[in-house]
Figure (cartoon, rainbow, N blue to C red):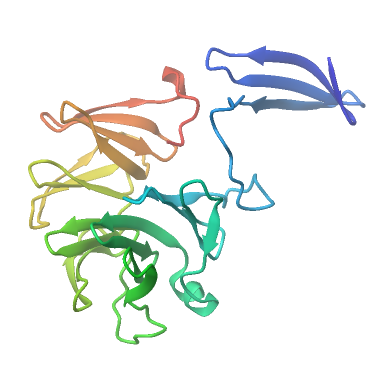
Length: 278
């Protein structure tokens, strides 16, 4: 039995995954339900970025380790980025001013090339960090600075020859970083949560309603699959060694998809997942 202030612990249970489950009650014998704790070994080090460490906004939309060994982090709830160089503490980086951030919202994507890092924001802003000068610059400056700028969402960035693909809430755009020219290449899918390119050059796009779409190398839609009967966002996707796809479904667990025959199998907490928010 454990005592914590006005609460009294009744039972402790450890499951096969090492999670500790606690039952407790208040002094009036009113039950508090269950709480859980996951022991973390000394191998991991936590870098807390806010005083409130429990809120749902404490999320990172992107993490990248660049060629210099520097870690980049894109927090959702803070006005700055994070960088951590080797053997140095985590450092906040204010790449844009407060007024611009209110217009473009938070940083969402990171993409490295041989000379720098691209940083895409939720809306209308594409930044670049140059390894040589160690400076930030704006490529697509956002509606606040360029009134005719299109409503481009940079939630995802992919290389596309000497150009970039930007995908998000408004479909897919082809961006020429040298001229800042933007072409709306795919309009049929309004909300894109994930996108990857396979070895054959096809683009696989995860969207809402459990829809998985495959496009050819020119971004022409070939087919759309409904991978589960439930309606979930496909938040991320990865290719397996055998060419299959693993899909992270928000609220729907994990889905294994076979492009060869279009079949899929979903795995949830009923199959042993710790939760269905993959």
